[in-house]
Figure 1: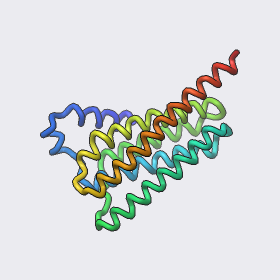
Figure 2: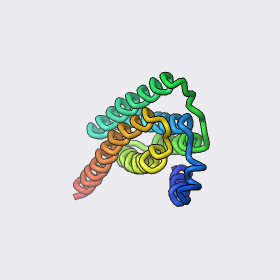
Figure 3: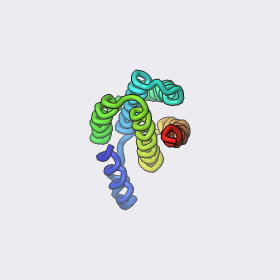
Figure 4: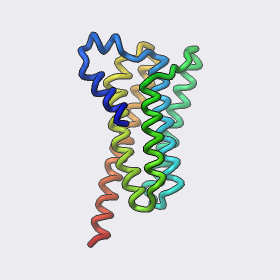
Length: 179
């Protein structure tokens, strides 16, 4: 995710004219968005396998359901438009960083896993939501793609808030257990 964050930061620092020239195309945007959703589904599947915490499991179930629904809508849209999502450096970076994080999460268990998963969800949604809002939506030229990204962003901002609440709750539970 460091590479993706660096990409987003570098892109936002560019002058507007340069940013427009380097903006992803609609087929690249479709691939980036789909990849980001698939990554979060994979994180959630690890949580469903490893966690015994009810709140973590409920959140992970929500991630699978919501990200799958948005990805299904995205696939239907690209099929309708006759667009083939185009792999690109950003989607490749997201996938590579996610593979590393999945290995890291897989080595944890119990409360340590729950906290790491929740903290990762906050960081991941913060990064993806920022990229969707400031890069993907402005770069999308197709109105239907732009609208789908806006709907997805509203859902994923809710995920970010839910994850932040979960981190706070898990931190509070940890502190309470030490007393």
